[in-house]
Amino acid sequence: MSHPAQTPLPTPALHSTRHPAAIADLSTLELAQILAERLAIGPQDWHQLKANRKARSLEQAATALVYLLKQQPDEALPRLRQAVGWLDRSLSAPPCPTHGHSQTAQTDTP
Image (cartoon, rainbow, N blue to C red):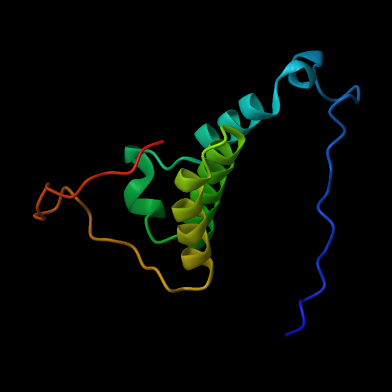
């Protein structure tokens, strides 16, 4: 099986004059946590983004990165699988938990 050509990822210059020195001083884990927080879908955005494949996959992949950096691959793997599921369309949005559905389902929080 051949692998598709991969485009190199852009690498921001953390030490450039465009970024404050504080960013360069953050650990990789801290940067990943900030990214995961920024990409997390909050309750106020749930209805708008619940079926947005890009938003859902970004949220899961960022959370997985945090777990990987914390040396918790068993926690990262299901989130990576979910990110892939959103991208390959094998997952779809669950029903809204506040519109007449049972509240017994567990939520997944890092």
